[in-house]
Every structure is written in C-alpha cells, then in structure tokens.
Length: 103
Image (cartoon, rainbow, N blue to C red; front, side, top):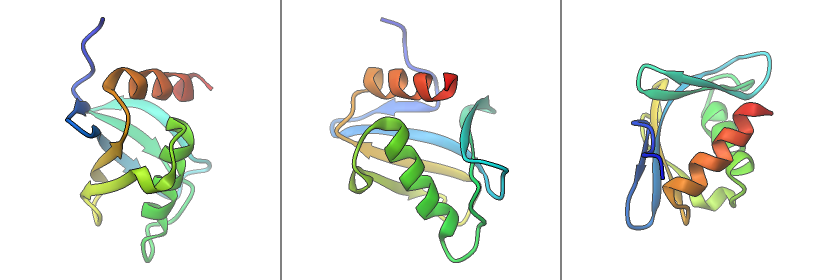
C-alpha cells in the first residue's frame, strides 16, 4: 500500500486533513495539493462562518460521510485548516478524495 500524502494523517478515530481553503470561488471543488495541504475552492464567502459550514458540507459529500463526522480542528478563521473526519481510514479517505478530484 502507498503511504498517505503529508496532508493526510490517520489517528485512532479517523483522519485529519490539512487544507488550504480559497473562498469566493466560481464553484466548490478540490483542486489538488498546494504547499503540503490539499487545496479546496469554495463558492461560499468567508462571512459569519458561511465558508466553514460550506467546507464541512462539501467534505462530507466528497468523503461520503455525515456532516456530524466532519469537524474543523484548527484554523477556523484562517485559510489554512485542519479538519478531522471521524470513522474513516487513511486509505478510504484518500480513495474518496482522489475520486472527487477526478470528477
């Protein structure tokens, strides 16, 4: 099995994903890797938590998990974020993110 990229870390309860978030994009999408993080463009503006809520919903859809399983661990007011996804292995998360990247 290939080792996971540096932006994806597994722990006992799920995975942590390092993200670089770009709000106010034309559409929400996963772009690829950027500076040791997974780059995500979001259509939502960074106003009153709208981008954070959109990020949680977008990642839940891409990873095929419930929104309650996705939480922002750090960087709530920053473009650099660490997001925890409960109930996934690193291999599952990588496979699902790869398919979302290809779409």
